[in-house]
Image (cartoon, rainbow, N blue to C red; front, side, top):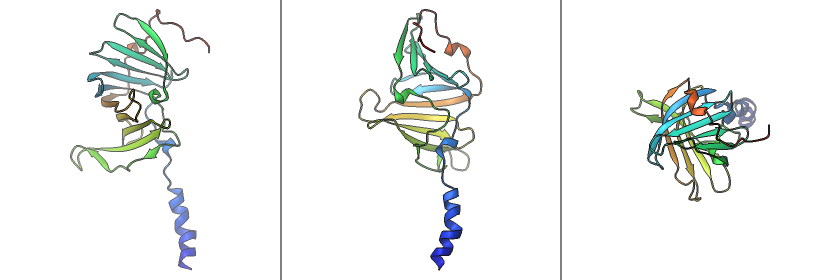
Length: 189
């Protein structure tokens, strides 16, 4: 009898509180300073979901990449405005909200800084393919602000790639998204 009462009264409440990863979203428009631990470089990263674009500019390496999230193409732009178009890999995609297959690795239990005075952070893992996963650290806020992005897997081109984001802003430097006229057109609609 106790089990039936539990099943009827408590179980629906537990099921109703199931975590929905698609509700964890980042802002439509933002920019961060970024440090790339793999490349030992720093710069700026930005996202503008109204244009479905993201960009990253590296200071020491002297290049930037503008990602077209709709066409899944990227413009790699050198310091002298040289330009190459590449097809994005699944691990390069930036999503406004976590996908349904995202796994929550903790629930607001991570703190950057001193407990009680630090920044609460949630971490997530997104499977990309059989070999690659993206681990994300976001602020425990709505909207969530990216703090950390790590690619893990045995593929040597992505294993260990770690980006650390600081100084978030809700505006962006529009120049980050400018594609020089020397760049080949993507073609198609």
